[in-house]
Length: 94
Image 1 (cartoon, one colour):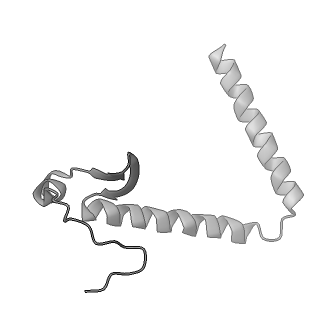
Image 2: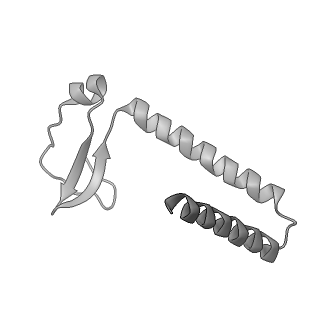
Image 3: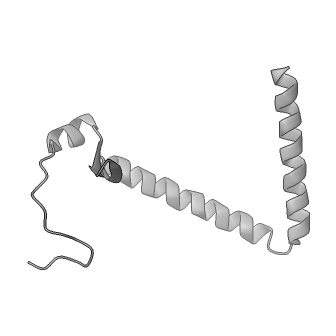
């Protein structure tokens, strides 16, 4: 069996599939202490994919609604909103 480019043949990793599927356990696969992949239940992965698609659809919709607005106007409105939030946070923290 040939492996896709970038894959290496390694000893089989034994994971408790029942725990992932039925209990919702998560596992992080590391190499030299660095996280490389995650094993999560399929339902959770599908939920993340759906949320990601919704997020980018929302970004696209906002972009489409503001396509005719000059960049300078958008940047100014963002700066004003950030300033207002910071002022409110400062007042609440005092």
